[in-house]
Length: 182
Image 1 (cartoon, rainbow, N blue to C red):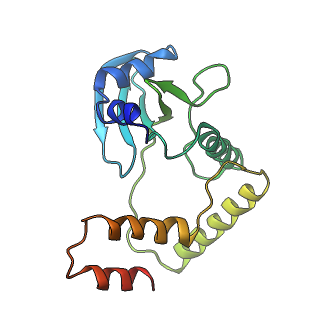
Image 2 (cartoon, rainbow, N blue to C red):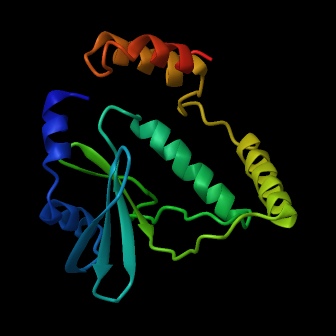
């Protein structure tokens, strides 16, 4: 991640989050709550019309603008196929991706859900059918900018970073490498 964008990303303030939301003409109440997120910055923002948004600020350098837009198109395709997804909101002029201080962001409507208990056989079949439908929709449109998942990219490369740095105690490093390579 470029250094200047790193600083902006980690220094993202509620005021900048609200500025991003209001660029598209939405009016917030000023309520801005950080949500847990593994890699990105995610906030819940309350609007004056009582709607709530979830705004995702994408970590700089992780995905390109084109890759993010490929994912947004995929989410819209899934929603049009009546799959249970939350598609990004249009920021105006047909765009779902904003940018503030060099950081891409995406607003989504807040949709409530619920956790289920353990899945029974019917639940597992429903999930299987849903996954099949997701793949069918995804196969209908090329996504040339989407990063490809591979063992090299998601296991070997991160493992080498961990091994080269001082992240894993020396006594555990050989076992850690062994388990990761299985």
